[in-house]
Length: 313
Image (cartoon, rainbow, N blue to C red; front, side, top):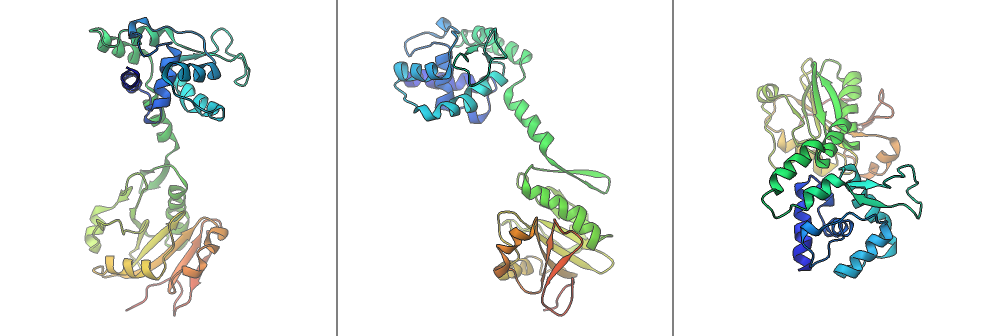
């Protein structure tokens, strides 16, 4: 009965729009505790008592035999109960919303709307009640998706908005396109920009086809490709935030991927800062360029007979 009740609670959490991060046993047990619903109780007998985090954890142990250590109290509060409140499925300190979170009197309670909906689980009214609940409460998973959308990295390319997933990697790619491209390839055209969340964040299909570039199916594409039509150069740029620079192995790999391209290839490694670059100095390949976002008007040239240009052979 215990496992069955936990699985039912998990299904309810998913149905009511809690994100994947809250679709776990801890969250299911927290929901059951806030409903005071032991293994043998029916869903229609659910209640909504006031409950603090420590009493909630004690209830889990007493009713379901699940013991959480005292130092996980904040995890329960921040990774489960907080999301219940954001999803409007629970209420923070009813009657005293200004009470500090760390107050020993802080309590939580299942909202009346959520309670009335959950009590109909397993009945013919469940689907319609869930639809009514969701119509009045924004699903938290949708809220989170909206927040992620706001934080995405936006780049303007030929009057079009290119949207990349949030993060340091995408921010560096934005710097490469706007700053490196602006200073060193002012009339260049963006051919390709990868994305950690969407491997093809931006692709100029027509230009790629004209240049004879094929998307490598094994993920060996550089992070950014810029074409300089005036010089007939194709700049292959790696943005280094977690993976390595254009070292000898990567240099050869890119050379093979773009072997059918009939323009000069220029290899560039981009770092956000000099300190990050220093971690990789020993492995950066000769006859390549290094660019730092923190010093956008300068390039570091790694030997060779020319400065910023392709090499034959």
